[in-house]
Amino acid sequence: MNGASHVRIARPSRDLAAAERFWVDGFGLSVLWRSEADGTSEEHALLMVGRPDAAWHLELVEAGEIQPRPTVEDLFVVYLGGPVSEQLVARLEAHGGRRVKAHNPYWEQWGVTVEDPDGYRLVLSTREWSNSRALSGS
Image (cartoon, rainbow, N blue to C red):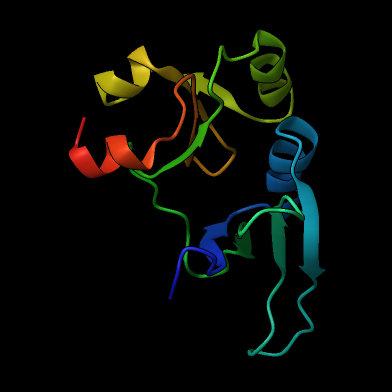
């Protein structure tokens, strides 16, 4: 593994159509891949969203028996490096999101937290990502 290795974040979803509305129509990600369940035990519906130019993507899998069980610390943090657009927050809410108070005061101070339709939290951080800050713990 190295810094260029692609990362997939996978999680179950109760409703892939609702998840797509939130992540694609609300947040602005692209659908990178989609597959429908084929009726066999080996295939299930899934939706991969992200940015085509990014080294990561979010895979949402039709929950079936495994239901989402997010906690207040299951966060997907995006460092915007500036103010969070109220238009973006309104669009996320219009597409199934719910603005919530962050569990951790750090995220309340440095961003906006929105729950997706499955209850997972998206943090829109006003900060910029800095490897030096992360490595020093500040």
